[in-house]
Length: 179
Figure 1 (tube, one colour):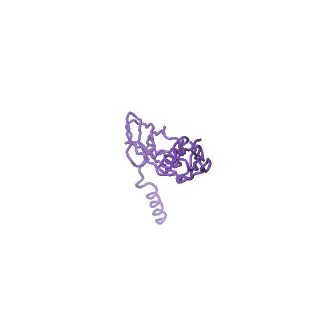
Figure 2 (tube, rainbow, N blue to C red; figure 1 turned 120 degrees about the horizontal axis):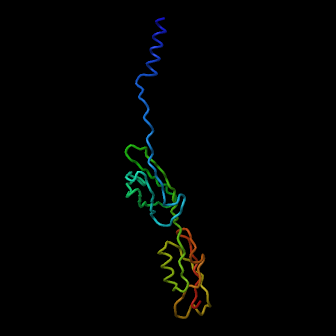
Figure 3 (cartoon, rainbow, N blue to C red; figure 1 turned 135 degrees about the horizontal axis):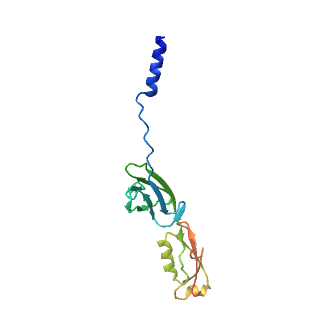
């Protein structure tokens, strides 16, 4: 009988001793992102992150840095690396469970081909190099045009102006004396 009593006492001690009553679940901080769009693409080296938070005095961190919070609205500027970026947002308030969210943003590093038609050849070469693009030339006109003095101008580009190309891509510039 004695071993049975000891076993029951040990079982009761393990089940009931030291257990604190569970507190009621704390409400969660409410966090809503407005900008940027998840999965969006930008060409800039930074992006604005904005949204709302409840309670209005909650602390918000965007990408590990404190964000400005006024009347429940938060904002922050985040620098972007080339390619894919994940921006974490965390909101905390005393007596509430924290809220977290994340947004994915792609920094598009492509370069827009400038409108060079009508520019002088040397100005076009300088502009392409300034943008980090390579220059190749297709010279038109007759052999006599090459001997006569005067400016050589850009008649067309390949790819055309406005197209997006990778950095260091070659742009073919078609030139001649009078287009």
